[in-house]
Length: 353
Image (tube, rainbow, N blue to C red; front, side, top):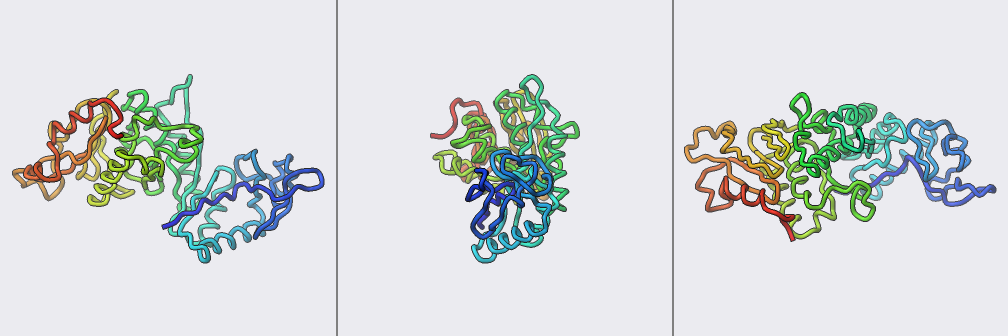
């Protein structure tokens, strides 16, 4: 399926007016300065005040006008039916009310839609605060404003997971109610989890996930609820690609879904361990842990297997993932349930070429 990046909070103009202001638009949506919010004085905007946060780099579109919304709906329907896109990724959705996003989704009927609600996390003296409930609640509020028709990138999970990995503070990965601390712990069916995108990493690098912790990051988001998103730069990297594919395979085989349940088993400075849907166990961090030594019960229906054990299926520097199976599988696909995880999880280096 193909997803289009829909940038309709702001729009670069094609021509300047008599005063040299960029506010004349061409193409299918031939607008003038009346389509720009009046908050944008530098562009000569003559529309209504903006309904969200200002984006100063380009003219902000006035979504309060019926004609503007009509034009955008017609354009989205054209993109959906004629060009053939299946869904929308809405850029900078903090700039206009979520109720308008709902209109655009209802009219264009994408298979999936999600927004980039990139909000600043809460810090004290440069250190991320443990409690980020207000941060994720603001993203949830935006999804609510769309009537639940749109999901949103889970920036809260990225921020907390990144801080936990960099500072060896894995105790951050549980909230005060025992849930994952990001949006995926509050409204998982609307959380699009990720560890990097074109703004945070790649050539821009505004907020990069540490390279040597990428395996841990994917071991987390590809086993947890929410809808995980893999960054193309990472998918194209040798070694890491194989890890990502293995984790994706396990997610599909075990039917780990966006609403899957998470039981956080242990969190310390150097360890996070959890069980998902009772049929997959995982850990990240340098601390030693395995579901066998922790006496994690087998999944429902497999309690009577006398040879049943938790078998390590994927592991690398600082991470390991287990599924339940027969000990006879040790000579097949399953690795030694204890030593493979211990050796690889404590090894130095990145775990890939």
